[in-house]
Each structure stands twice: as C-alpha cells, then as structure tokens.
Image (tube, rainbow, N blue to C red; front, top):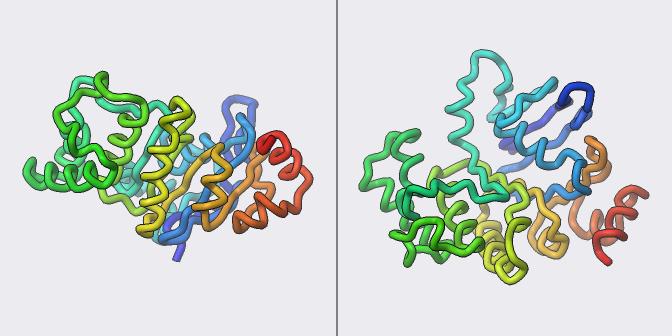
Length: 243
C-alpha cells in the first residue's frame, strides 16, 4: 500500500521550473533513494512532500487523500513525516534530550514523562543515550545528525525523509550515520532518502529513482538503475559519480 503518492507534481521558482510532472509513490516499509546531480530537483521534491515548499501543481496523496486540498490541516499532516536535514537543524539552546522531547510535547501533546521515555528509546537506538545533557555545540557533526534522526523518530512518523543526511559531515563521520540508517531500513521503516552515497543506495534501497532536470528519468531496483541502467542520462551520471 502506498503511504505517499505523488501525481503530476510541478514546482516553479519564478520562470525556473524545478519539477516537471513528477509521478511516483512510496510503499509502506519501502526504502527509496533519490539520486541525481545537484539542481536535478531531488531536495525540492522532498521539500514539496513535507510542504516546506508549496507545489505549483499536481497532487500529494497521503492515505488516499490529496493533502494539497484547502480542507487539509498541513501541520497535522507534517506530524506523520520525520525530516532529517543536511545541516541537522537542532535547537542550539536545548540539550540532546530536550531536542527530542519538545516537538512531542508541543505537537503531539505528550506528557514530559512519556516524551522522555520515547526520546531515550530512540537515542539509545542511534547510540546517543549517553549524551542526553550535552548541548549541540559539544557534539561532532555525526553525533548531531544521529540526534536529529532520533528526534524525527520520536514523533513516530509514517515516513522518514532524509535530505542528503551525510553531505555536511566529515568523511570519517559518514559511516556512523549510514550505519544508523541501515539499521532503520532493516527494521522496516518507510524511508525516502536523497543521497549521493551510491554504495549505500545499492545496499539498502528497495528502489532507486534517478532525477535529472526536474523529471524522473529512470527508477527500479538498485541493481537495474545503478548497475545496468537503461537510460543514457543515467549512464552518464553514474560514469561521473562512480569514478
């Protein structure tokens, strides 16, 4: 069953059309990796799905309903999506535990006790339960990103969205974040990941979607798209990327 279905989605910034008639869906328990060059529309697509950007046209169907209809509560819809950004976006004035509880208490109206229990569960999963009292400035990039993942998971989302979660990290810290993401995939979490980590996509994705110039050029299992691509544009991209 599709958790999110995108139909004829478009997005323009002024005269620049960044997304053109994009159609695809994410099934429950599926891991989908979006790949493509910078400027191909991957991050914009992710930001349209969680409505950080308002699409110019098309539909985003969640649980059978178009959430772009005026009658839908956007804030309520967003509570079902966990978002992990390139730059972590942690609250610098909160410690690690508070970063993972404030959204639960404000948005989901959980008690402090319940929010802390849930936060600790996920901080343990990402290996950050020893750092509950630390402030973000005391953490490495990899640690911050693991806290950001725990924070997103604490909201119990239907889908986890990752926007190049390793691109701001030093190379030695990339592995620790990818390890956590592999674990989440193994546990059956529904994940949509914008990434330039091709090996990770090959290992973890159920499906790889290659975007170029605002359109989906090719999609399919990792072995097909990454090892035996059909389209010339995909072949060119991989030739540049996998050097």
